[in-house]
Length: 195
Image: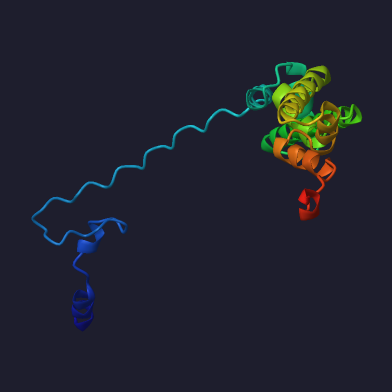
């Protein structure tokens, strides 16, 4: 009989079997058990995969390239080299900058070959673009204006033209050079005025 009592003393009350192990046990037994939390919302579907046409369209919109075949070739070449679309766009724009710089240098060299100052030729390019004839006309007009201004100050036209060739269209420097080229004026002494 003692065995039965021992079993009875070790017997559990059974309340632990009323709840699931992950469920919280209520502190007050007179309240109902709360419902389990709702399932988490399903994540939104992932955006559709980009296609090569999407890449080409984006390349064209950023770079201004209007020829779809050229854009497709540039994008394909970049991807074949393991580059991203962003790198392809950046390299294309940098190549345009380099091409413009090369063209600017070529136009300036041609204008300098015509006898114009490099600084003046650079400003002509900035004002007129890469049309050499328009740049040369701009330089000649600027040259004529500076020479006319120097002649208006009393300098000889040939001297003013040489000053322009040396100092470009900086009127003050040209005028200073022209003044430096004049022969010195003899100074009168007191002996010249003696009777």
